[in-house]
Image 1 (cartoon, rainbow, N blue to C red):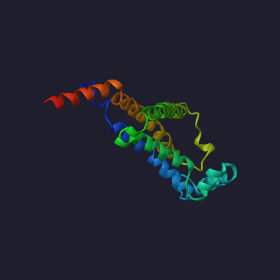
Image 2: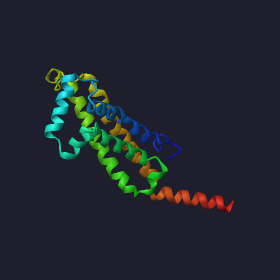
Image 3: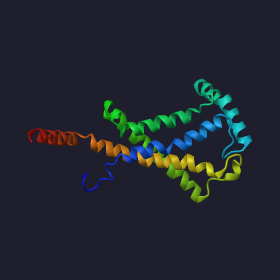
Length: 180
């Protein structure tokens, strides 16, 4: 399988997944620090007021320090993607990486596809929320869809690379090298 479809076992999937949510994390961190980017000053003020009034104590504390909890979760998701392609990721049980990767990937693919479907059919009305630029959808939902697809592919690749049959084949190859 590796010889016929090297793209399937590529570690590039995990690296791409790790990078996919970085623009989202940067944008949310900038907003948490009051930087007006792809939003109006009023939109940022409303976001801060919402976080101060409705957030749980941990999120409220982090937001006051300039850290958006969802940006932190995006960075954790990026670390999960890197764990699928780096050697240090093999120190963890493979199922602790595969289960959240597969479930998260499918969930984020669903979020991205539903959002883009709503955009196509006109269910999203940008005049309802003029404080945020329509371009904000690109780093947010585009990043979600990209992360969903690439983390799913990284999980599939990792699952194949770390499967029992792959370990047996690698063991046999090592034994043949020792005999020579």
